[in-house]
Amino acid sequence: MKIAIDSDINGVSLKKILCEYFSDENLDYTDLAYQDSHESDYPDIAFNLVLSHTLIVG
Image (cartoon, rainbow, N blue to C red; front, side, top):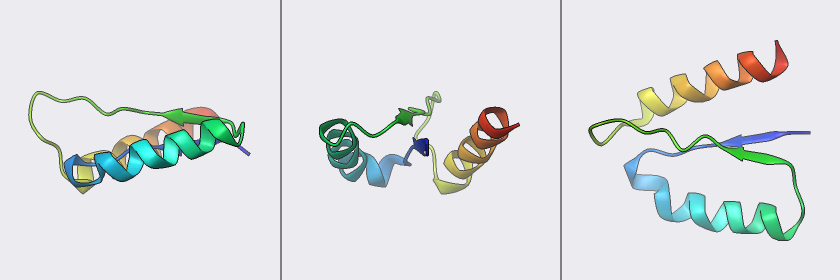
């Protein structure tokens, strides 16, 4: 199983905690770290996750 994780501006702190947990447990994950010139909201992040899933799974 491969985990893809990202967050909007409101979830950055929780995402950091989860990434640390994934690392500690040696889980295979990718932090997509969505970057934009402005603070992004959930729809932008969700689109990025769906796009990455499509690229990973095919």
